[in-house]
Length: 254
Image 1 (cartoon, rainbow, N blue to C red):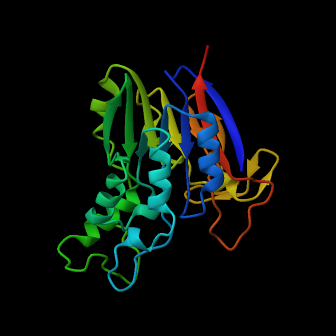
Image 2 (cartoon, rainbow, N blue to C red):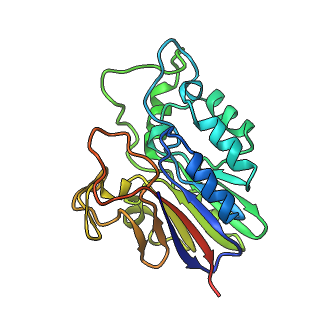
Image 3 (cartoon, rainbow, N blue to C red):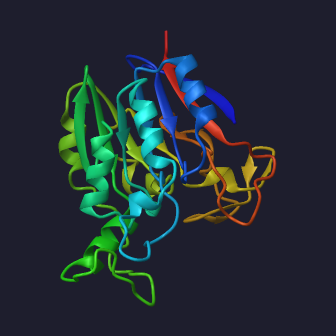
């Protein structure tokens, strides 16, 4: 795991956690303990896998997620936006996440010490919620993935961008930036999802979901305000190549 530091005019150090995917977390906690950020921003995909069997709560099937959140909360306040792997989480799952002290930002924003922090929910989450409506099963199954909602909900950003203070938006999908976010007045946007392009040749990733082959938005800083983490896990059969996992720190720019 590499530690990458960027500098922005943030009031204090911000740690960026992306794509944990229910992996062991001890090296991450050691890094956070050493760096002592003021806040920890999680851009989604904490969980791994789809809908659980036997109607167990999805979050209870994850070995590391809740202990990881509790360990993070002992270091700093934590804020979470929902990624595509959170698509099946039910209200009871979200409550267990909140019980750790984690602030879930589900198409909403909050203010902490002059910093306005928002979380844009993945359209996969919205899509499954629509599919779930009216069904008795906690995690109803379908033959094909729902494809009713194909875009994130952005109307609330009009209120968000008007708030006084430094504005940080947690957004799992970097590919949302050119389509839905570029024209909003937001100081810093934090993303993950692309896993660095899985294989990297120099600075070029090879493939990313939502972007396809030779994607543009997989890592680093783009447009002076979009910071993309390469993520902290690999749960696919395809190994990462020249692409170490990454935790990002955003530090105050002097």
